[in-house]
Image (cartoon, rainbow, N blue to C red):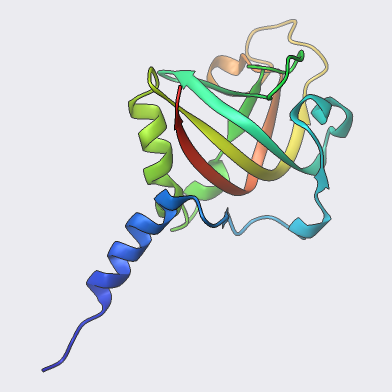
Length: 153
């Protein structure tokens, strides 16, 4: 009798990411070890640089953004850009966690440990100049690696 391990692999890839025990890379980052570890509110000092930070990911419908764990000007003004994950199969590893947050946005938030490229516009004087839905965010993190933990609000 021949045993197929393919269904077990599928279960592994489905349930293990929901534990948030490991970081999922997009496969498009350079040397992720070179990322500067900063707090969320320090991000403005690291424009166009590879950073590592912790943040709270939350939103409503198509309006999603990040905030830090303390008050600062960047709270709810930073778009978390997962586009690099859509390029390949690694999207499957974070889809479950993000779906839990997106589908129950009134009850859930995401605590993210992120490595990514921070980008910021000088000002948002015109609509559509920023990032995210309708360009409303003044900055973004292009995610290269992420660990996601889903929490109740």
